[in-house]
Length: 185
Image 1 (cartoon, rainbow, N blue to C red):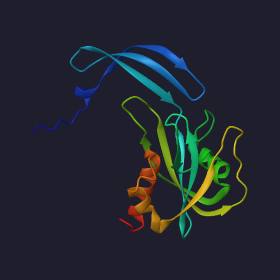
Image 2 (image 1 turned 30 degrees about the vertical axis):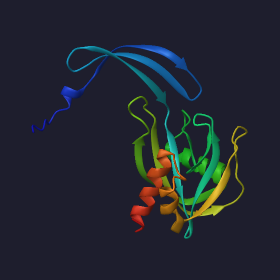
Image 3 (image 1 turned 90 degrees about the vertical axis):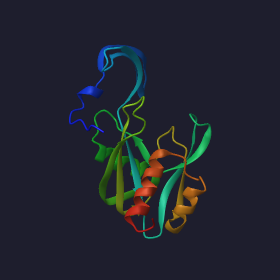
Image 4 (image 1 turned 45 degrees about the horizontal axis):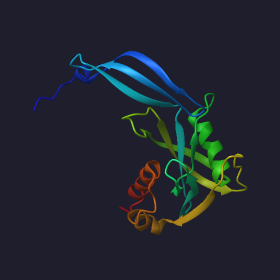
């Protein structure tokens, strides 16, 4: 096996870009690219401003939101999350989403990871935070948000994950991280 030190033999070069859709949350483009072997190919890419997601725990439980997702046509149990607005820093969005979706504020937010949701077709980057020393008050949902706050005992996370109660990628990443770093795995 030969290990190459450069990535140049993997790079696709964009030759042109066509706007397919421009929306409130995403833009879609069709790219014409030149592959490393000089053959032309097409890529459809979803562009997204990014999002934050939050691990919200206390000594006994992790907090989730239960909400309907039209894209999957089902109600999902997810960690609190939200899209980053153009003028916001991810830290600011994290604090805002924590308050909106859970009613909580945190003494501190620790950035855990940044990861792409599905880089095969999207540039959406999620910033995962852990909210420490939380205090609850009233939720501040936006007019188009309908969700329930759900408290799941920490001791139940592993079995509920195995039972398929969590089907959302960011939520699975967050639970795995929490279980791994807190001695549950």
